[in-house]
Length: 343
Image 1 (cartoon, one colour):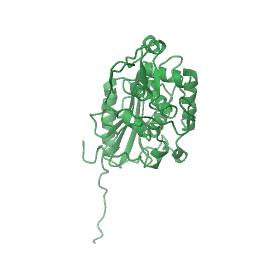
Image 2 (cartoon, rainbow, N blue to C red):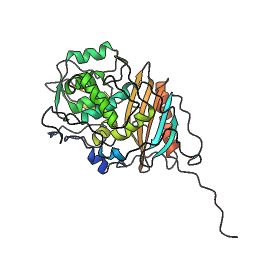
Image 3 (tube, rainbow, N blue to C red):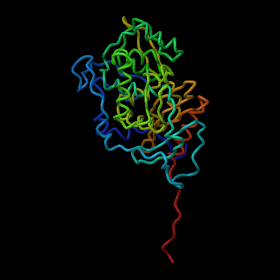
Image 4 (tube, helix red, strand yellow):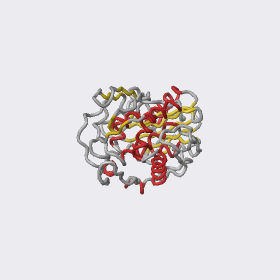
């Protein structure tokens, strides 16, 4: 990496009053260290009426002032060294949400399936619906749903009882469709109602080109659609939540065996973690229709870079492309020519 490139900083640039306004229920996780904190007694969500009573889903308070840069307004030429790296995917978007600078925009407003990037919204909705220490019982239908659809799973078994906290790790790290189905079933209640909450939240965020049809991104009953621009907006908003940020940046989560569930070890499918300095998430995805997708973010010199790659044909290449984009966007601007005042 060049000096001035992507470097991990101790605190996220956006961990301010905006984060406090979107903080999740008590029982929040510790800063990202690769493992989660021991369970602590959780309080009800401030807007919840008690156990299982969902809080209203609303956009963050700061969202009223949030306006993502137009997809057609890339950063001016000459702001950094060289041209943008090639990104072979069908669509790509990279921006700085604090400065409002669009570094790269290609087919960013084109609607297409986004596979398991869908689970970012599933997790975001859950953090505003349930308490982290709520316990969910896994049913055979949750396990069967993942198996029948050939989906990625978290190796859950019927009868296990796990906390919402652990199930969110199961959703985000190994991209478990069994876990996302269980959460939607309980907190919709039912997947149809849960998906309606996802779409209502998308509308409140201004994601005008996003429609969800399930909580996992599978092509059944229909693939749904979004855009690279909408997914970048979602990533920026979601990462303002400290719990989401911690989960997304965790490389490995271990659940010890108890009387009510087996032992589980879940590895994050995001290969940027631990390899690319400054990366704090966010999510991978793949279906045949969507191709390989990646939503990613990193802290660079006190600012945040958020990007999305959709429709890549090579799973590993999406990570290499994201690394090159982050390094390129994080490079310092080249010296500008000037004239001496001396005559």
